[in-house]
Image 1 (cartoon, rainbow, N blue to C red):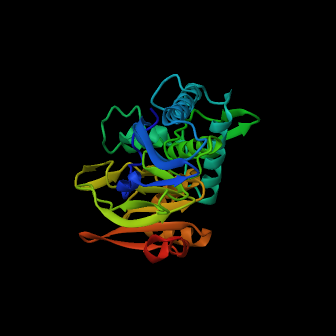
Image 2 (image 1 turned 90 degrees about the horizontal axis):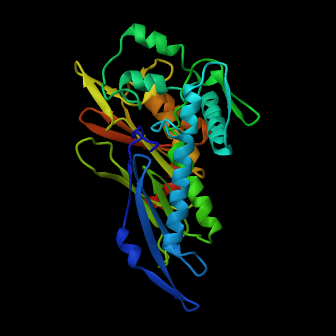
Length: 347
């Protein structure tokens, strides 16, 4: 499996009762079909309009699960035989041939790292392990010693990773962790396969990252609910209509520990080598690419409520921020988000 639930699912599909809707056209009954299952340490769900010429549900499910298996074999940090774990075990100064998908994620990570001034970094696995959030943290979550932090700092840094042709190379003994963008990438891969098979209307979700396109047979849009950042219960913050955008929410409200009255989130700031310490509880990003939405939600969460909002406005990112204030929460959206989802969520 890929995930350690570094990004907790923060989105829930709304209005499932519409699955019964049908539309008869040219003798073929269009229906909303659905399948899903376990994936990447969490679950996945695919809803789609079954139109004439689209393969049956079993065939589509087999295609989707083959994609999950491929991503797992290439990118999982939770299996020793994955390609990225083989790379992670290789010594400093080594290179390893990688498939196009792995190189795409590295290139995306490089872009996010550069554009955010270092707020995004794919090489934080040793830090995650040290704080107890990584695949080899032994489940012991605690504040590490300064000596241990200094040692690990020498083994992280996106700038110490580079691509040479089809090879991934590292200058120091670092490790790559794709958990911050792998789910969004997987959603985009699944959608590309569905489109190849003739599906034109769908809602695809994997570990909380999702994208929807088109309309249901009754003409209704796909609707999704943004979840309020509460660790004691599930509650809906806002419902939006979605067509053509990927959605990702990053938050600090489920995967954390407390020590001496201080809350330590699983989201680490590469600049401080420590969990984020600000009032931004969750941020949702909408983008045409689910991969970019996934990465950008991490960037904005790391930057925090002020720098993150300023960055999102400057870059024209559609983002919805939920910040802690006293015992409650306050929300604000970027201008781009409101343009997309104004008037009750209509685009």
